[in-house]
Image 1 (spheres, rainbow, N blue to C red):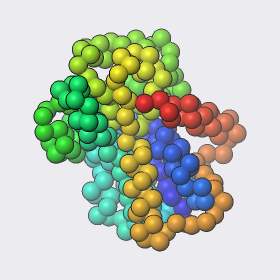
Image 2: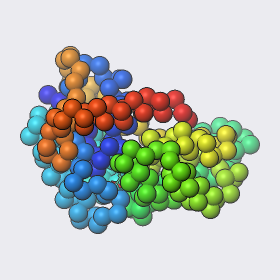
Image 3: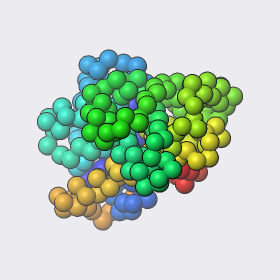
Length: 266
Ligand code: DGL
């Protein structure tokens, strides 16, 4: 059986990319809901509906576990999905706790702030509020929605003048010398690590939640004895239609290659 990854678009490839490195003998499905991306500006009801239908589809394709490789869909739908489906459903959690723990280890950074960037839906969602309420006891986390980055990522535009201008104008609203880290609260944002690095002061760490999600996936699979020993493979779907065109597969490979270049930027 297969491990499925779901996202509104191509952001979730960043989580799949890490899973491919860690699980060498599994078969994967990747589902991008291309007909409905972006989710970050849609209603909660629409997002729940799209996500539920996609997970149903993936289970019919033989998924033994589904990773919701999308912070927005996790924020809206994870509880409902777990209640409805009888297989492991793993979600995303922005690395806020990691950011706070890291700065507590460095005395000079104790009173610095953490900037979390996400989609608008994630930014106002209860899930993020609860997480911040649990781990941010000194009220050091600020949240900034950056919806345009999702559009840029879907257009394969990661370092253009428009991207730089957008990021500069949004990030320079903050006095960045007061910050120790930036937390990527949207899987699409992993494509911009090099561009962010050009803008941010060098002491600011860039943190994503991908490792935590893949660790959770592996421990759930191990706990249920679901690890397999197959030849590694990936099948891609755009909103229930299998991707078969050579040029589209080549494009997906380019995205994965870009993620190779981003993986060590922190
Ligand atoms: N990749 C998604 C996330 O992690 C959502 C992007 C969108 O569709 O707005 O939040």
